[in-house]
Length: 477
Ligand SMILES: *Cc1c(COP(=O)(O)O)cnc(C)c1O
Image (tube, rainbow, N blue to C red; front, side, top):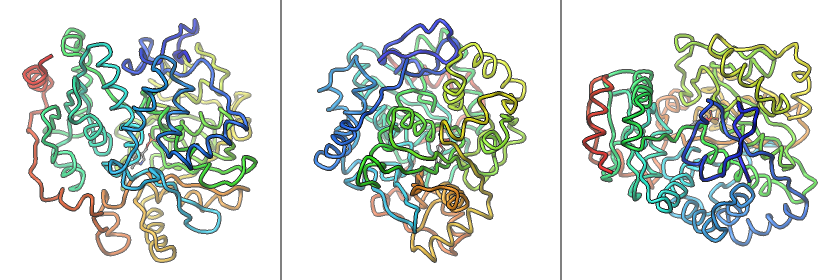
């Protein structure tokens, strides 16, 4: 399988392992397969028994084989077996599925080491990076900024790995106590936590300043693990397939997915699975108050917000002003017209966005791609958490609650069972849970000790040069 950039009209192809370590394409576009593999009935039937008899990791290897032709199949099997197993994941199904109520299911994506769905992709990325760096005799220095889930998920995926160091910037005292304990508790010599004297945007600016220094970047082999990395999406396609298998008995049955999203990362994998021919009926986008995507799917107007107009909400991992993975969907929807995508995402997005309401494709998006959308507010998610706790006996986190709220809103318009993707465990967001049910969430036993553990973090000023110096001192190649 070869890959192309969404902004390259000459369609120069790249191999999987080249784009694995590259992240963003040189032209600013995102990588996608030249064409999506097409699933047939026999394959789906075979995968049912692979999942049942050999487990999630074996299914993952089968799916990856369709996208990766420059890693031998046996190595892929080993990579997936090391990424998806117990006790790394708390449940032997890796992604168990449960029923919430009539017509609504929950797929549990938070059984991984940091209790957030990002582990699903990051655990695989850690294995793939280590494998490929070893093969190339190369090293990698990951520099990132996080306000929560991404950073800890990346650190747990990269800890203890040969040839990889992680420098993660966090806004000092801004993460939830559990998130801080999780990240700062790591004492692995290749993990460096930096608490920056500033906000999340300042952390991002420092990372950008470091990336803009081409010499420094080259010398220290600086890379990223952000959500536009193709391999992360590929990893996510697997749980759409496993979840569809677990909620159906035959290949004629369709299910719909309702996905809480900000960056369009999680649901983009659903779009890819559907394009491959997985029997998915509807893909339902659930946003919080930062409703850029809900607005687009309702009106055709993609109106990105400034950071000043981006709300800080109680589902913070969806507080984004623009949806970075959305470019991939628009590329497909516009018939893979790279020139148009360059114009829309290379230019128009920089000055506020674009409006497709008058474009012929807009009215076809719902039928052709299955998309619907809805939004949820703070009051909605508190109410939904309380209601699920009281009526269904299930405690869900604020992001998952946004999904459940939207799924319940559209339930009567959808003919198939709706699976809500759970994206984090309640323990990560104790304050909002307490507001909803009057007490803190229980700490799962696997995390019982982290609140009391030592903390490994250095305080630094909001100054890119100081951070660079720290990286240089600690990133011996
Ligand atoms: C990252 C994250 C999301 C949103 O993911 P997208 O990439 O925007 O789809 C939702 N919930 C939680 C808990 C997350 O960590």
